[in-house]
Picture 1 (cartoon, rainbow, N blue to C red):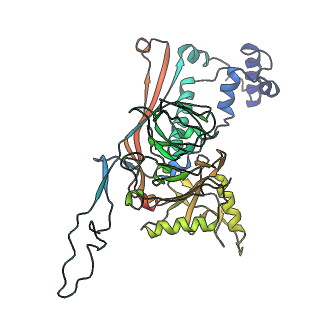
Picture 2 (picture 1 turned 90 degrees about the vertical axis):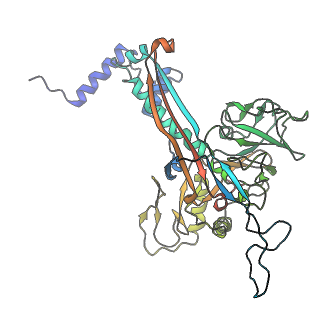
Picture 3 (picture 1 turned 30 degrees about the vertical axis):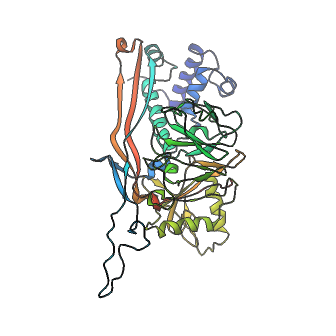
Length: 457
């Protein structure tokens, strides 16, 4: 039998070999590692072992996933049966000898919902693959990059589902660049179609079809689009950039909008499916206008129980029953303080409420419940979109009151991974991997969803 080596001795031998043979003496010692700021090894190995990235995907996990099915949309009935030219309803009491109600034809609006493609890829040179299998390397670099891509892929989906729909423009905006409040640029994705409201106010579609498409999102504040000049005018400070067509998944913020919704104190028209944006608009008062939205004309305000109660009330008045309250961590702590002020403790125990694959933060079963409100689970998500005031200063996160019975992620093509090792086709000595899927966020009843915006952090 061979000599037995203790784990401590084995690790010591490995470290001695690693320091001396590959990177030089003491390279990986803690104090040296922390001072080497700009090496590839520091950036790559450091993120692998001490991952500082936020990879939580709460909202995605909480939503139900369904097969796409044989449909390209659905139909909404947009009236309550009052025939044209009269206030008389089509259904009413009839006296013994009275006339029947006038005949009316219902009004229907078709909703088109088509799948969106989301894809992500990586590449690893074969030299890197070989070298990283040697002593002191990172191991199977292809497997590691695949793992990283998987996490990035799901995170991107979560961020698309929680992308903001509109943002106010800051100084520097022009015909091809929207300069937005720092931290809101990532809500606009490459391929999105973006139009703008100017401070007149007036709706300003691009001068030519095909313009207004996002080609670059830089520094999470600057969005580059194809020319959006309209009538000789260009976006300026205080104008509103609005998404009227998503290249990726429709977001919950797109759904929780209405025609002329106030963003930063100005109106905006956001497109969702084919109900918003330019034509046809989500006409105020019609079923398609739908979601209850609470703004404060671009002025920040604190979250209150009255705001939350009103949103829940509107959902119920429209025939829904809230199943989920979604907010950022900033609003969660504000709500916790509001409820704690009235709480009476007779005993305490931690418990959680499940929504999909997610669980609420632990709360108490007595008094007012911390992790639920009126029995509705509260899920904080760090990706929850934020508002901005009329001066383009970023405020706190929005709060969404949702009836998730009518919200689902429809999967047209399940998430798929493929790998390419054909060097001739790639014209390079690399191994490439690709993850992709086709899906879309569906909301078949927009009217029972709600949003509270213009909240302080």
